[in-house]
Image (cartoon, rainbow, N blue to C red):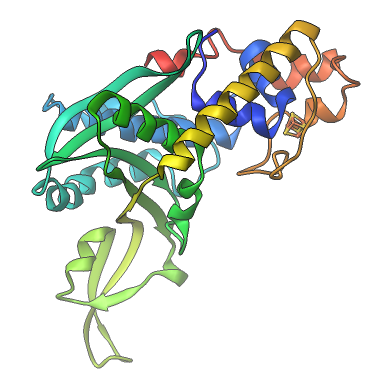
Length: 310
Ligand code: SF4
């Protein structure tokens, strides 16, 4: 069994969700916003991977097959604009770091017969300090946006891996790129010489009676980039390992007995945009699923672990 920290986190929140996604291998049909969300992030990651490997980047090729669903911000044009503006922010950070590796896939050993797969975006160093760099895309870098990464198992797995492999890890540099869309009534007004005008996909310089001078009327897509550094203590790393072993043992028991509990600890049913299995879950009795709902709304995933191979 190949396990990564996302699977363990899914299982911790709800064993049934883990079963439906990774064991039964089903997902909601492609009309779902979560699909667009995942695809959006994947394409930005692909762009950044090519950018750091210094490969030729054709942004149109990356974005012209994007399925955007009903998303207002995360559209093809939004993706193109976010990628186009990303390097300006990265150049400021990159001047302080040397890249060690890009897109690393490896394992953290938990015990003699258990390990967890890790996939890191990038590893950098500054003198003797090694950092993991992770990229996130969002439609809002709200206040406290990065706090969710202070407790997530994925980040702990990454720090564990780097400490074991390189003997040191100074933390994870989280870089978030935000893409938003402003319609006319909410479009911001900036001074005509403001460098922030470039962060908008459209702008027009017009005389403003209110300000008594020419101003830039901005609208369309807007990008913003922010970074934060987080780390883990020795105790947190040890706890994570112990917890993973316990949860993997629990998972193995559920597989053996073919019985997966429904859980809503941490609000799993409504977490993020809500659990994609809610319709099926509501209509099921234990492990008996409604065949009509299953066939109408869900589809089979050829390889539920394909994301680990990409
Ligand atoms: S709807 Fe809730 S209980 Fe059902 S699978 Fe999703 S998270 Fe689990």
